[in-house]
Length: 150
Image 1 (tube, rainbow, N blue to C red):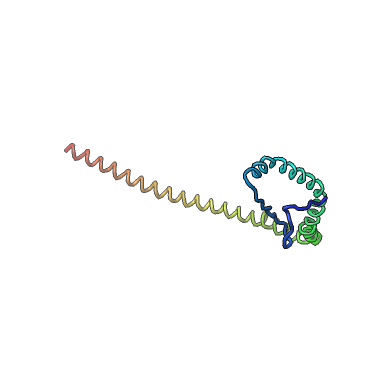
Image 2 (cartoon, rainbow, N blue to C red; image 1 turned 90 degrees about the vertical axis):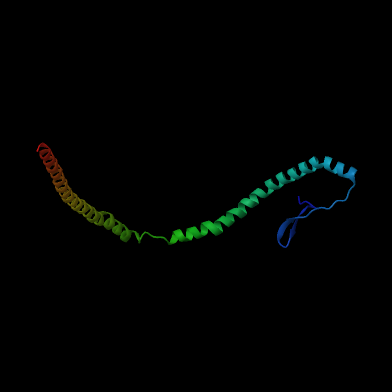
């Protein structure tokens, strides 16, 4: 049934908690606190009963909200989707991955070959420079050795 004299009231379309003011002396306050456990038990029983009675209503309302705001718009989108856009996109993908990929791989190969040629030319130049320096050092050593003998 419906609870009367409850602290949960509807105000301006929203549910709010209303505090219950109580005036008491120390003896009444002590008795009030001692009986607090019984009041908590009653509140928990009420919560359990209300949960059981409201579960089906909540399921129905929640399902309606999910249908209205999520599933119906998604269904509308999916009903309008066709696969007519796929052939051109697939063709572009084949062109991009296969034909343009082969051209790109060929350019990479040519670049490696050109780089190899440049490295070979540089190696030859560096060998010639090294050879000249080694020959100069050897010639200088021979000159020093012949001048020491004289």
